[in-house]
Amino acid sequence: MQPFFHSIIMSKHDNLIQLSTAPVGRLLWQYSLPAVVGMVVMSLYNIVDRIFIGQFVGPEAIAGLAITFPVMNLSAAIGVLIGAGSSSRVSIMMGADDKNGAEMVLGNSLVLSILNCCIYLTIFAVFLDEILIAFGASDATLPYARDFMLWILPGMFLTNMAFSFNNIMRASGYPVKAMVTMFIGAGVNILIVPVTIYWLGMGIKGAAIATDIAMAISAVFVMKHFFNRKSTLHFIRGTFTLKWPIVAGIISIGAAPSIVNACASVINMMINKNLYAYGGDLAVGAAGIFTTFASLMTMVIIGICQGMQPIVGYNYGAGNTARLKRAYYMAVGASSLICILGASFALSFPAVIARIFTTDAGLIEVTRLALSTSMVAFWVVGFQIVSTNFFQSIGKAGKSIFLSLTRQVIFLIPLLIYFPPIFGLKGVWMAFPLSDILATVITAIMIVWQMKQINRGAARA
Image (cartoon, rainbow, N blue to C red; front, side, top):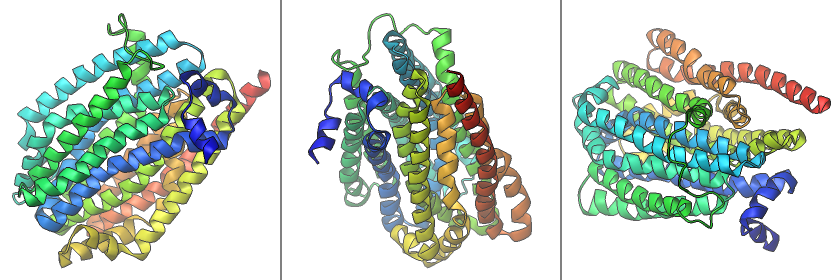
């Protein structure tokens, strides 16, 4: 164990040198493990909240919380636009030995994050009820959804700041420190949630308050890192004036994962409306449980992608194509294994998963149907997500955006329109696996072509 701990407690210079010299397998483990742990810890915010709300408040409350998913995704889309775009640009610039450019990205990212948060928080605050109703809230679930959102709004800015700059921290050579900052916030949240929801009797409002406190603490730790002049990258004067080339570079790369989140909001709106039409509030609640379980796996995959991203980005900038491809293939293998295990468990024990979140017999039965249908093709999702992030990591924003749209929009939306009138509630769940398979076919074609281009470039060099 000593070599591993020695490798994660490196000097800031060694952090970057290792991206081009260390064995790729060990490097991917070194960067992915903290990222995976951080993403799983982040998902614990949602999981813990939903368990306590489902067990102690009721099925209507968990359905109301499910209504807030797309609204929260809109907030996350703004944060990802800056965070993912900035971290990719930082990795590529550090690989090209352009530290000044990377610090310009850092300063511009802070200004962009503040401006964007001010805009969307104002819109949410003014039109909250209208937004929640548009996303599928019923008379029974609207009070719960409104209560949660009113109290989570102050923390949404802190959430975006913590997650966005946590990605940049990881990309600039501090994977373990990035993990620790996520641990701190999640640990606080886990400790506070039972107090606010159960012992203080705050219900769904208590979950929001606990999250606000936890994210405030995480944000303080993350921002303290970038105000420290000893960090590899830190805030300096002259980097806070927005420069169009810098902004355009951030947005062009961050657009792909941002569009994924924004599209997920639109998809969730369609799903919630279909679910309510064909299965009522219980079906909406089942979608909340299904989404929570599936997101646990996708969070692990995203963590692997975050570990892959600085390796791929740095070596792409440095022209080390062999290391770039090895990191990608290893990330695909690890992610596919996670998806196979998750899908197998969901298909084998759907009722067990449902009982973790609720004791309501009706909700358990609807959730069983949801998991046993929607997870049939989940085993291909790892390849599709890693490949989409691979294109983002090498600066191919257009391809990354297109692949994001294939699974979330191009295939899923038509299936959601066509299947439910024919198959009813089951048709909503059937749209997911078919969309996954079709998107994976397109992804495989594009990856094969891209790898041929990379090989040709290496041969010419």
